[in-house]
Image (cartoon, rainbow, N blue to C red; front, top):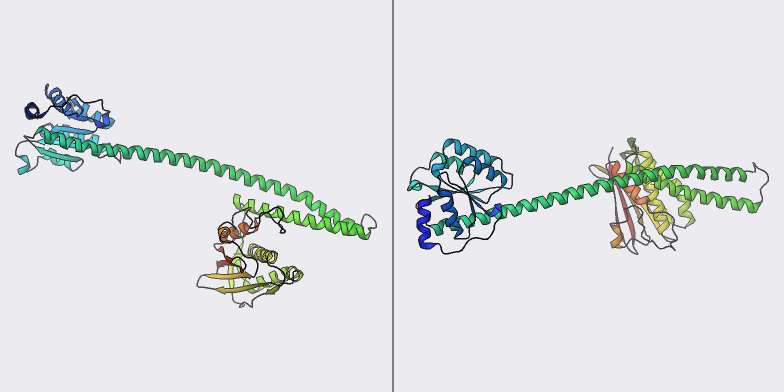
Length: 408
């Protein structure tokens, strides 16, 4: 190998010594004989190719495991033991690595059967065969091409490393956020529970006073007590909403799924919301659903969803408007639609109305109560029962909320 290289250099190599290279840009030469290594390095240095020579295959394999650019060796170096050691080192390479190996074959070898050592190496590595005698310019071109390919592999390694670091950072941040979110939900659950106790006491004592248990009550005092009770019920409703949402987030909410008759469910909802609709002079239309229509759901929770949808429609539909329910089913689901002629929802808000604490009208002067949890809770409840809740709306034309739950 060395003789042909040095002979070519005397005629062709005119370049100066190479600049410093890291190991990823080095050619690792296996040069068992005494002068092969220094001569090969000298030849390649004149072409600005950095090289390191190794006199034993063990040293070369250690360098391969540590990371090199290209391996250059002669076919006669691939004796059985050396070949097996090199194959073992190649097998230890990471997934991103495909180390280029340039093998100088004996003269005329490419025109006959490739030697067993070269063939074994070629099936396990990125091998280029050059038949001797080879011109130095040809060898240098092959090595430079291999080094460029190897550099792309190192670039890929660096990219994968950065990607993994970013992924680890994202996972850590997600874990911290999830922990904080759990702490928040647990806090909301505890505080909501603690707040309900004194509120229930307020309502209870106001009712006792109103009944005259503590003595006669004037008409003005009764009016004041009614205001206290309305405020207590309103505040209790808000706290119950927060508590329900906290239970959903912490996963502590349990579902008792049974067959729920749709006609009976809607009849109950109609009786509960009709007084509110009449107070605003709204036309409330309920469907006559087939008695056989039933869904798999938690009766209490699906009723909560429908009542929340109806209450919202009543809030956001002006006097004289209309609210209509429809029921239907497809192959797998029961569909309940709540259609109103209210003010509708702007397109930019449609994707956010199911997020917690989001309200279409967030102004301090808004006239509607609530903290923006009703729809978030309703959708989560629907999904917890293997269903969904979606909306279609147009400003000034009203909204249609569709509850979808599995058929019984």
